[in-house]
Image 1 (cartoon, rainbow, N blue to C red):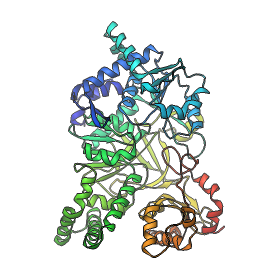
Image 2 (cartoon, rainbow, N blue to C red):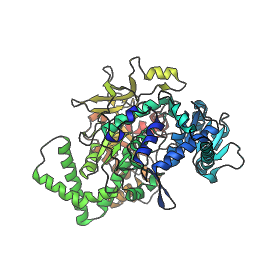
Image 3 (cartoon, rainbow, N blue to C red):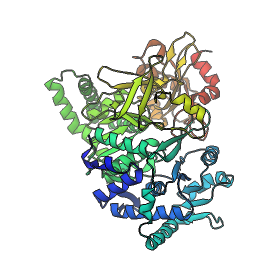
Image 4 (cartoon, helix red, strand yellow):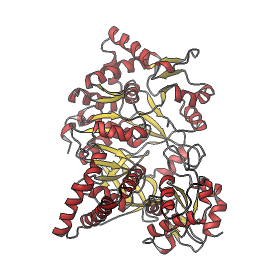
Length: 609
């Protein structure tokens, strides 16, 4: 089966430029790609996008980019990211994304390991960040800048994207068929990208993905999700990540109008302006939105707060019944309809008022938060994927099980290893291996073509898959019991007092949690209870009354876990875990080994040595 908007795509050459350029041509949308500039939204029509990709491709060709040449890119989300991506791919080049948050040593490593010839940089701020890394990498031949005012005056390698595009336009005027000849030379099974994994342990690994890896994923996702040509999306997750980049290809090929959001602090405004109907997000975003809503609702006071709390309870009861296929009484239906009209309608307005569904990936989202959003008429479809296999599975609007990661998309196989419960994946979207790392490739891909994900999970009788945790994140208490920390952390983050939580206790007597509070919420909570809230963050972390207040929430939110998984003691930290401090990866995953070593004394204190 082929989605209606992709009819005939299976007979196209299976490369990303052929797919995306055909989609721009076929849908011919006046707002194919959209960005905000000087306070107003600017639109790039599909036909213009085709011309720009062509001119940029010929421009890259003029500066020496051809088959299998590596081009690194570091930029916020903006149309130039996608246009440059497609242009480089059109001449057989290989895109190497770099996160804007990547530590300088990792930037240097990626540039050197990938053997990048060209480095694309968005503007001055990121150039200041990466300049030292670039100067120490000898093989970089050219620097391409999106912003003209960022081009270094005295670096002969540097050129603006506009100048590069002009070079390409000149070449097209000389030979109108040159671009088409370049496209005809593309091989679907050749490398399209090397994406370096975050690396919670050890150095990053370059995942090699071909054009066919992506195009097979485009077709299978399009057949699995109801994506419409009339949809609007807001691209806020980094395009350097496999999830958002794949989603861009999928949405673009289905004729969706893509709107770029370059920073999370612009999201609230853009949601109101764009009114997206479909978009991707991660649990961290939903947790932050939920806590802001709850904080506002409970600060209203009087009858408004009572109505808000009542609506939350009704929403939980209603969606719990829906999710578990239990009878919903007429009274509960009526209550939910009233809560929807009086309270939840404001939630829907907060995400633009026209959202059909979110697709979420990256980490577990607690049932409580999922039920709240579903009850509010904001469907969140949990999905699953990884750099090594693109987007693998997801729940569907008409087949959703809260807590699961859904069912595999067409053409993708998933299995549970009998030995240890590891989730295995096989299909055309699975990588060919790790760049320059044959031994690592052999460990990850077995002889039957199964990719070993490193995630532990199970499959229910209806074919839905569930993730328990990462194998390497599971830890054993001194009593021999194994703890899956991600599940417990998702429970802790239901508390409005918690910004970040890391569950600890490996080889100790009991489970504990290192918690970075949501300081605004915590100060208000302790103030309401008559505790002095005016001290510094460090002073409040050491205040036994403050610690007890957060600890009570931890106990309450984990009380339904197994006894050995319940958090009984917490240790408060004044500042958030960060990439800069080496505690998180560029994709915001916790480096647990770093945390265990750095906070070992605190962990001994709350977990017992």
